[in-house]
Length: 272
Ligand code: BTN
Image (cartoon, rainbow, N blue to C red):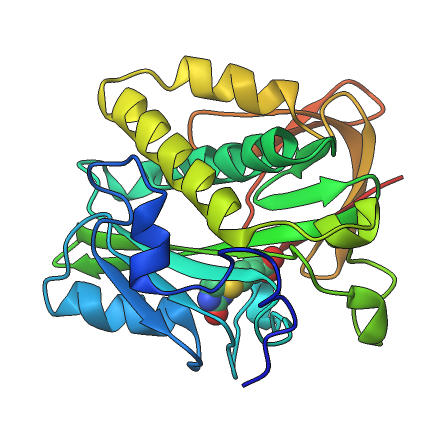
């Protein structure tokens, strides 16, 4: 497999290089690196079913069947971006698992900001944007048995060094950190910062502090206070986006001031 960014010092992904720069105690301490795989979410799910530990990181340089939300594909060329999944075993009710997407999207947006001068923002429920283009997406999948939550897989794709303009399907809607700033970024450094932030926020969340997370998330929201269009099962609604509620629903205020709760499952959302 070609890796266009081998010249970037220390940017070759492997269990060893990832661990070298990592200051976590749980997230990324168990690593499965694959040069190529179907989808890291699939591999992480298999590991979780076999008892894989919380914090296990599955990471690859290339996915042949990268999955996005709403049955979409996640496109990413070999060796340029971050494609990884994490196993969580949260002590939560099933309806609270959206909180992991909240903390993960916050961690990604903050890490992108920290590692570049880019003003990354979060678009509910789980996309990271730079200006009006998507730079990262998150796909969370739950493992449930006898109505009990067994595990959650949080899969994260970040366009770090790729050129989405080369791909017709996403060229108008996607960007990457390197396209925005005309320089390459270390995937290893970005990954380390994300894992450290995820670990910190997860610890806070398990300690009962969801409000600080929501506040931080709101402050980086791309849509809060803006007019948005929500398309759900063919029906279109417009309104002002507010925050999300305790169950993760987006609150949309329509022209008459009436509030409506929007569930993320089947929604596509755009700024008007
Ligand atoms: C979306 O924006 O629709 C979510 C995209 C999630 C992509 C990541 S890449 C790593 C992990 N493995 C997958 O197959 N999907 C997620």
